[in-house]
View 1 (tube, rainbow, N blue to C red):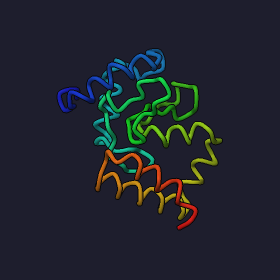
View 2: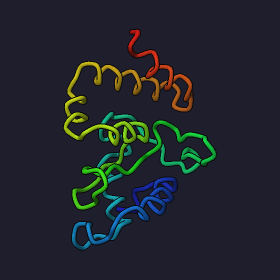
View 3: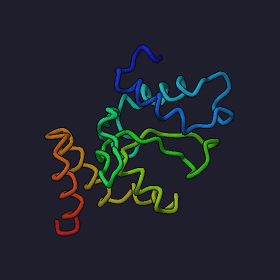
View 4: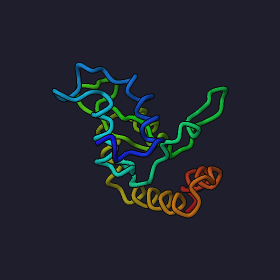
Length: 146
């Protein structure tokens, strides 16, 4: 499985594997194999938005008040704070939003026309100019005025 990954994805796995408890993994899988399986299953796209994610560590927040790329890959705990319920790999900003909402609320939100429209616009922007972060932020900020 690992041989199907890019160098950036392998580096991301090295970093993300530190945040998983081995005892909660499916039997017989190492942390790295588990994460590799998630990446391959997603084909590098966010599980909640369908947006192609960045696995480049330079797109991760360097700290000091600087933000990560909104579409940087993030490890989502399906049940916040618990490894035993599994994980998905999702865009950083969407994971941040999910972490601030009750799970049922987030799952219901995904079914709404507004969510689908916003995800469509963000996906189009990511395909047009992935690294124009100001345009990505502007889409979200101006969404209510559309």
